[in-house]
Image (cartoon, rainbow, N blue to C red; front, top):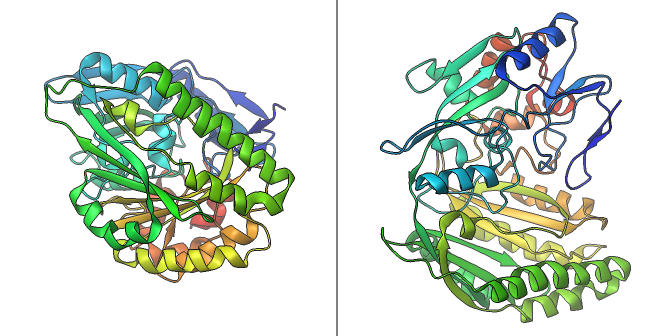
Length: 437
């Protein structure tokens, strides 16, 4: 058996076999064979989920869709682009750029596959923008009997509503059709501000800036605010120089910050002082670049993460609770928290379903204790109806999640129709979706 582990080391598995189909027909044959012998199979993507959502159960099979990559078709006039599901977001961005197109919004990591990012509810930031699933125009997936099924708002619309964020529970995505737009430039302004000042004005910032987020360093006075503004067509990008990018991102945000984290892991009592130092050393920068180069950033320092989406109006009380929690923890926190916003949507299992949302993501440096911190944060978020990100650490099960998602049982019904024997199941799905009825 071949061992598999995710990027953060929080999930691992020893699948019976890892299948690497070279085309859709081969994928269909693999799924049909697994189903015929009563087995289970999971697509593992690029392993950037912190939960075991992709991990096959012991003795079960895994799917590596890396060969199912690249563009199928693209219409530059309409912006509709069909891409194979195993394509990473990084490669997709490059392919779109060559066509003069771009994704409307992106998260800050681009290592995920298109299928994995959509299926777990990946999002960026921007009060007027939804998550990646809201940019999906159509999907094709292989279901448990090996059939290839297509869905869109006009073709099997109920399946489309369920499949855009599906946790891989309905089938294996083969292609995704995305609504893209003409490539655009983002003007970015990053710099430190006192946390209290940010909190007092964040609602206005979220409403007036196209894409805004901030990073709170738990033991520092300042937070890092990022404002990304969409530029008019024809704007000439003025990116950071290669030297400035190397110093700011490679040296400071990765090498130097990683060194601080390693020191804090070795000597935990230093973490508050190191966190204050990191907060005080935040720099200001202003530049513009092709959108995907601004949205996504290099992440070389490994961490574990939990994230909840809360009603946007409840963000202040969640942050108040988080600020009160950190000083009481037995183990210090070496990583900043990230705060973003997104528009409500109609995707059944989207964390922003039916409500404008604020996202609070808490992190800990890999190898440092995080359980008490994440549990305390989860209790704070749950008190305001927070929904955990499907790919980030949380302890909720189907009973509580049913209360948080109005279309939860509709999703379970569609799942039971498409996969009555749980071919695409695993222990994580058993926990968060419950048994197939």
